Image 1: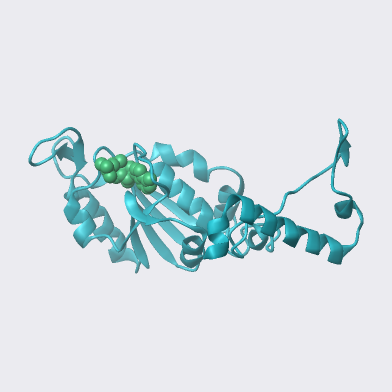
Image 2: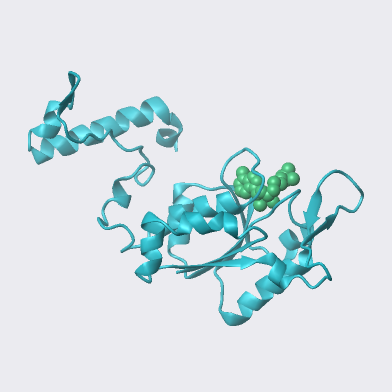
Length: 225
Ligand code: SAH
């Protein structure tokens, strides 16, 4: 998979992809994440990528031309499955969408800043808009990092134990059961006996029950869905 992220602040995105699982996924050649600095696609004298809003009002607006130049350049090199704009009013990003996007070959993610992008970008250049929640960030970079992380870890070969992603919350419509590690007793706080029993069927049943119980208590909406 290839993910091209278009941003006016590429430095904000360098660290999320240069550690741990996301770094290894790139080293293994499973995914390639390319950052594109919008200023490199600006044509104005000062290489600006934003301007005042028509009609007035506070806040700058990201110009269409550098964004169009960048997307056009990328599209001339390969076909893209989606051109995604990070937007607080977009479709709410969820695990099913992460699953769907993890099967794609090439994705473009566009990060907004300031008041957002010129509406014509959204009308003509974007195929999908995603939000990571009902709150407003100062830029789309952290949202793009969140979405990329959730997608990349689902690609086969990225996690060392491939079944691991399948047992995470939301994959089967339930949240994950509690987990424990050594020591079996700490300050008198004990790990449930069943987990130490070595009885696989009982352990599986316990996990299933705990998942269900947690989902009922914390995310009852998942059960209704
Ligand atoms: N004026 C806009 C908010 C702009 S915030 C409005 O009121 O809707 C600046 C940029 O941050 C946006 O263009 C978007 O790319 C990003 N952003 C902010 N909140 C986000 C969220 N919840 N999910 C995804 N991207 C978000």
